[in-house]
Length: 167
Image (tube, rainbow, N blue to C red):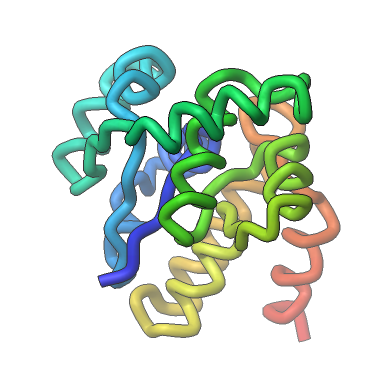
C-alpha cells in the first residue's frame, strides 16, 4: 500500500461534488497530520468525520518533520503551517503530496516531491477501472460547474478531458 500525504483542498473538491469516497478506491493510504485534520477540516460541516470514516489516517510529526516544516517557513512564506507540515511529511517519508494549492505545488516541485491533485486522482480512478467513463465525466462536469467558486482547478485541464467525450 502506497502512502500519500494530503492537504485539505483536494478533499474539499471531492466533497463539493458529493464524491468524497472516490479517492479511497485507489490502493493508497492517505495520511494527514492530526492537528491539520482537527483545525482545517471544519468546512463543509462533517467533512472531517466523513474522511476519517472513509480511511484518512491521522499521523503525528516526527522531530525531523517538525524541524523541516519550520525550515520551510522562511523559504516558502506563502505556505501556511499546515501546508509546510504536509510538504515536510511528503519529503521526509518520500511519499506523494496530494494538493491543488499552487504555492504548495511549486514548493513541492522545488523540494523534488511528487504531487498529485484532484484531476490526477480522477484520471487514476478511470485508468485503473475504479470508476467508469460515465462517472468520470460526471465528476468533471460537476467540477467544471463549480470551478472559479468553491473549486479552483485549471479550466484547460478539465476542458481537455471533457473534449475526449465530444468526439
